[in-house]
Every structure is written in C-alpha cells, then in structure tokens.
Length: 216
View 1: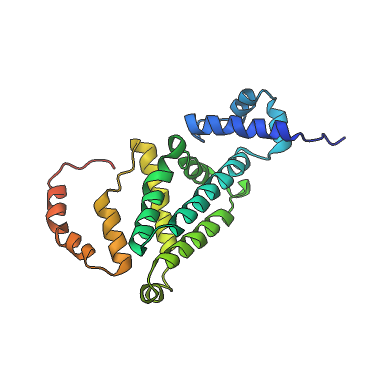
View 2: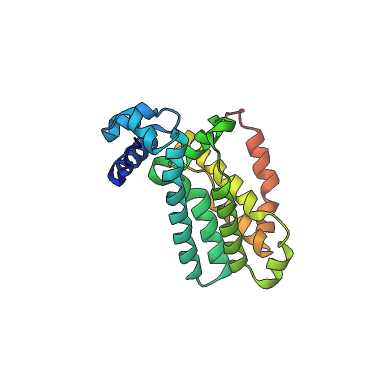
C-alpha cells in the first residue's frame, strides 16, 4: 500500500532542514537530525525525499529564485546603468552570500560532496546565468551590450558569486570592497574610472607582496 503524503509533513521536514542547514551547514547535518527536528522518523523523511541533496534543492531553489527576482525588480527601478550594474554586483558578491547565516554555502558543500548518482541539477545555475545576463543587458548602453554579447560574462559573475559564498563561510564576511565593485562596474561600462583604479594596482600589489603568506 502506498502511503499518502501529507503537505504539512513535507513542509515540516523542509522547515527543519532549513534551520539545521542555516545553523550547522549541509555537511554537518544528517537526515536523522532533520527527522528529529521535524518530529518524524528518518524513514518518513525518505517517503518525501530521496536524499539529503533533494531536500536542499527543495529549499535552495525557491530561496535563490525569490532573491534574484526581487533584485531584478529593484534594478528596473534604478535611474542609471551604473547604479543598476553596481547594485547587481553588491547583491551578488556581498548581500546574498551573507544572508541567513551564509545559507548559500550549503549548495557549495552539497555539490562538492555529491556523487554521480545523487542527482546534481544544473537547471538552476543555467536559469541564474540567464537572469543575470538579462540584468546586465538591461543595464548596459546598446554600444556596450553589443561589444560583450558573445562573452559568457554571467558565468564569470556566478563563479565569483560561489567564491563569495565560500569566503563568507570561512571568514563570516565577504571581502569584496567598494573599490573592486567600482572597478568592475566601470570596466563593464567602458568608463575611465577603472583605469584610475588600475593605475594604483602595482603599489597595492607591492604592499601585499611584503606581507607574510596567509591562507585566504
């Protein structure tokens, strides 16, 4: 006899998993922990989800989509290309990686430890890159838009996005400063401010080289 699934049980499992992932992290959370937190048996969890990774996707997918869609609406209301591009970078590289105690890092932990049979999905990252591409194209002047049309810029921004999630997990802060945000913004717009920042880079590197080697 097939057991009838109850929406309230599924939601209790997801709510419990979210709390545990946000507080402990994906790697330190077991299915038995989720079951205990939700007030069900581990066997019950597997009636609703095939794996811990599937539970995470059920939480992470709507969590990320909601933030990106809200960001898209915010960008559309900003008055200038520079303001839109800068806001996009700040959200991707500072704000979202730090939300909910660095919840974004859970997907990094999950993917890095997943086996081939566990069901990694690329659907969400493809959607994310498509949405970011649309945001960039909507912000850039037509001449700049045509110039970078063939560049997988969104892919590069998402790789940095993932790196910022790891950075927050390790240091409890994201170390992307205003100077970096402004440099990338100006570079995308083809302005000269980025060149002024670059002119100071050799001196900055010299100072950095003088420091003892540290693990990032």
